[in-house]
Image 1 (cartoon, rainbow, N blue to C red):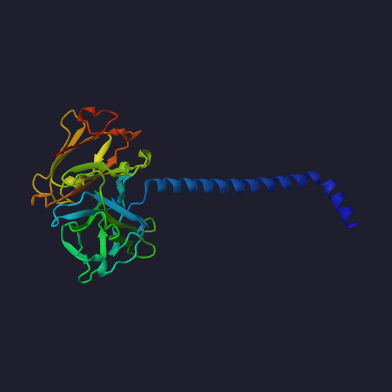
Image 2 (cartoon, rainbow, N blue to C red):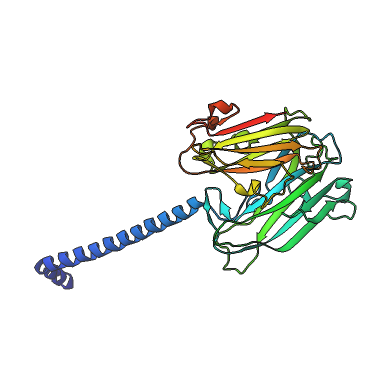
Length: 354
């Protein structure tokens, strides 16, 4: 009886019921549309931010990478009193956009530990007479990692990349591996670098720790008395489309003149390399020449000599190049060893005179 009453009511009030149902459906659709729109908008913001990259980076170390093996290639030294020098550079910006840097000081702690390529600690017996000297950007010795003390690890707290409203900031550590390193047999003697951010829980949520296990390996097809210059990403078979910038390595032994030219419309060299703010070079060792009037080509000449005290017996230079965003290279053919081929599609010349 009650069910019949309900049916009679529905028949008499069908229009009002239909309108009420339609309104509820529209409200639901509107809420779903608002949710989807908000989610899509949030996703766009997140993607846009991540594309800029995190503003705490390195020329060698990688994000959350303290257990990642990072080999550095050298020709075998003929002078055991010389060293294999590896520069670890920190930036408060990302290579994808060097014009944007972090908006406050970045505080961190850094630890250097002697390990194998998988991060397992070494012993004094493993090290033998080998040493690794850790220096700061001013050339001051921070620690000597060896097996005699033994000093197998060193932690430095309270480090920072300062904030400057008008320019980006760089930090630098140098690892000098002793010249008695056997580049073929000592590959399992490495230095693990672990950089952990230091601050309150609410700080640096947009940054990541940096790290890596740095080991030495012998460069293939490189004569001990020669020099070579190459782009690390190209040598490691990285797609040119995946590069926001380029790390050039110049390494060798003996004397050579390395000439580097680039088109400033498309590439920008890290000015801190040649203006003596981060690196310290001998007189005439590194000379930069800005483009002449009416030209776009800048020049950098390195007078390398591992036997000279003027160069501090340096056997390696690490130089960073950034894309200006004016154009994108379609292949690695934008690099040449023929100076006369510099053009709108060939932007970077590297020449080595032994």
